[in-house]
Structure formats: C-alpha cells, structure tokens
Length: 215
Image 1 (cartoon, helix red, strand yellow):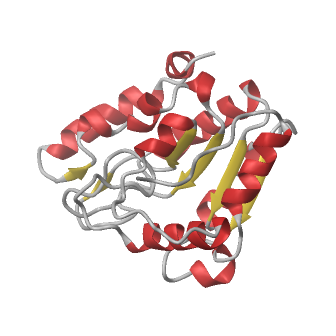
Image 2 (spheres, rainbow, N blue to C red):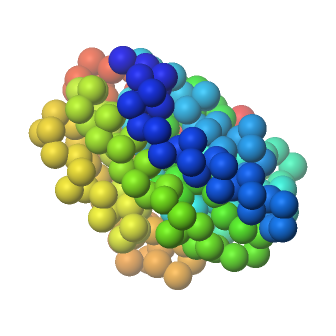
Image 3 (cartoon, rainbow, N blue to C red):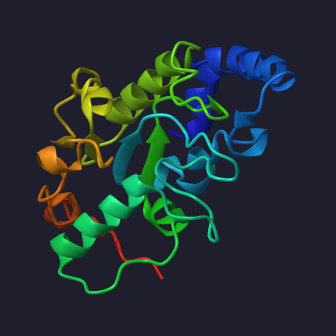
C-alpha cells in the first residue's frame, strides 16, 4: 500500500481543493497549496512508525508548513511546540532544546505529523473545521490502522482523542494526553513521557526507534 492508494480511494479531497481555490480569491488561506499535503510527501507510507495528530494549521503569516505543530526554520517557535520541546527535554533527560521549530527530521524518520483539519483562514483558528477535512483525515487514520501493524498513535487533546474509536484494528498502539497548548499542557501532557514510551514500543516490535533530538 502507498498514499496513492489512499488518495485514489478517497475522492473528497479533490472537492476540498476546489473549495480552497475559490476561498483564496477573497481570503488568505494557510498553508500554501503546495504544502497542504506536505505530511504525506515527507513520510512515505511504508516508512510510517508514529502518528501525531494536531488540530488545524497555525493561522498567522509564514507559520503553517503542512506538518502538525511544525514551522519553518527562522520562524518563531509557537507556544505549543515550546511545550512539546520541554516535555521532550524532561522525558529524555536532555539539556538542549532545538532552537528552531522545523520538524522535517521527525517526518523523514516515519513520524506522520497530521493535522485533522488541513487548511485555515488567516487569523481565524478553526475556521475550516466544518469544511470537510475531518472526513478525509478520518479516512487517513482508518487507512493507516487497517494497513499497518505496530504504529504508535499519539493523541494530544480532546479533538485528537476523539479519533481513537477509528483506531480499532487492535494491531496498533494509542497513547493519549492533553493538548500541549499553554491552556491545557499541565493537565496531562507534561509528564506523559510519550517520546520514550513510543521508542520502547518500537524497540519491542524490532522497529528502529525515533531520534527525537533536532539539530
């Protein structure tokens, strides 16, 4: 199986792209067209090991790059990603935290950084929540669950956790915590140790662990 099999099977993304094109005539939409499916380009289906579900893209200029929680190098690191780095530092007992917010290195190792909503209007978080992306990304999650074994799903926050009933094959793993945003990070994200737990699962299944440290 490849991502191409998914896109051939799930056709509503074509309609969604047409809707986005119309909206771009009057609105500023993130990310740019070439980055909407960036997560699929950077993490080939056969290399997939971990799925991290985000919500929708960052909604300020030059932030969204098509990967959940990620921004390009040179862009100020958003608060949620700062908290992710803090948990990473504490979990892996590392003294240094990355000085940039680009998560390409994770993606290329098999960490699929998927937002449940793939586009957003400038300055309006959640503005495309009812557009139809959730139907598509639910299909993505089902496709992964049905065609992979030993994938670790990291579900952070209520929106991500709500997808756990889709992951029902019994062949993959689910770890949950609160969202890493400043509003909820202290509920259960800090101290969840998802990075080390994920690697323990991968090693147990004789899969190469993720190098979580970013240069």
